[in-house]
Length: 224
Ligand code: DC
Image: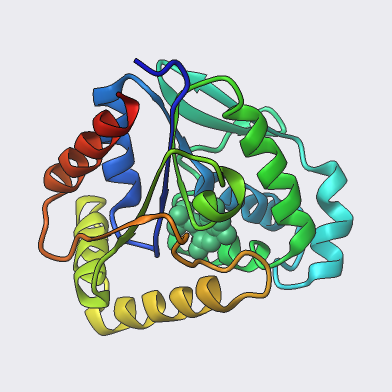
């Protein structure tokens, strides 16, 4: 059995990365790290301090004041901003949009990548995001690129909103997903691309459980 093993899962918004990554981590006894939550926390920090998250100079100037702390409590990743647990507060579509914006700025990315690499240095992790296989864990023995069609991702998003008692317009959600893909895939620094050695999985007509089992099987093969 390999002592230290890392699994990098990248893919666009709504492809099911976090659901699947959590299942894989639970079954293999690895830690799950959600890097999107860290970019979301930067966006939340901007909103809290009235910093325009589309203004690179202002965001970068404020970065040294970012007091972000990532902790694992009962196996779940919690993020604290200035001492406040913001884990659930950052999970809104608006903060997601802000995260995508701050994620286009190189100094923000460098700061996040350093933090993520230090968190994963000595532990076996399943990490999800957009640049994990290409930048954060380029030597990960297992890299997955998880995709799904836009309409299926929009249906999943509608389902999540419905669970929270919120309603939304399907066409509008599709449009938001396309915009997010555009920003994440075409930014200058670390755009979302499939790493050359990543395994491509299309989850459009697979359940999360099926995707997770496929990843677990691949991990077990490579850990031998
Ligand atoms: O996975 P998510 O929806 O929580 O991510 C929110 C945004 O954060 C995403 O649209 C782009 C940015 N992000 C990034 O640039 N790099 C990552 N590793 C993770 C997220």
